[in-house]
Amino acid sequence: MAIPSGLGATIGFVQEAVVGTYLTPTRWVQFDKEALKLKKKALQGAGLHGGLYELALRRVYTNRMTDGPVDFDITDRGLGLFLSNMIGSTVILGTPVTGVTLQTHAAGSVNGKTLACQVGRPSTDGTMNPFSYNGLKVVDWEISCAVEQFAKLALTFDGWDEVTSGGYTAASFLAANPLTFAGGTVILGGVVTTSTGIASVAGGVTVP
Image (tube, rainbow, N blue to C red; front, side, top):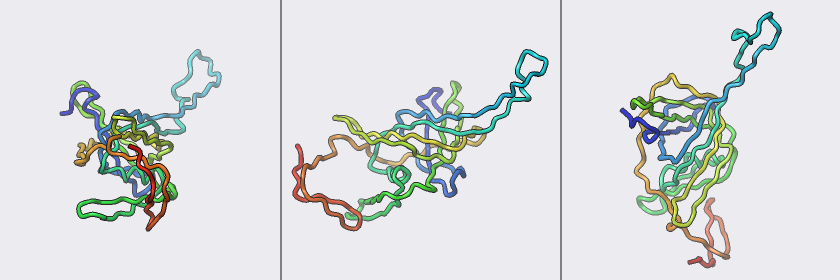
């Protein structure tokens, strides 16, 4: 039984193998806010029929789509799924140090890259209501990190459909640490070189 309020909400994602084909989420994030919603396009017949009111039988839905933002903290694990959909990269994994995984992302095409998502929204009685989305495309994104704050990722999605008839998949979170302003560095000047797709700066001055 979930917390009977918005505090019990969950959101999970997975890379779709086939564009628009929903899959069960495998990656959950602790999010600040989300506003994914269904939009339906309806046509209403306005022909005269000897009555005062429009007829329900002359109302037809011609299109369904979803869109909306999702904002959450950036952590030291789990970001690769979203980066790949943001810039069209193919993730290259390396282990520069034992126990440390390095991800390299080179910008590419976002064609064919879509996510499936499920949002769990609790009712006031604690029942978890699943809202499942397919064919989600990242259409806008922003990474930010203010002084003395966590690093943030704001994503805006455009998708195919929303389904509420499926089952709910319980969230399972990665053991990950949030990235903060204190963990970053700013380098001025220097010479940028690239080796095996990884950029590095030599001779720059680190701003204290």
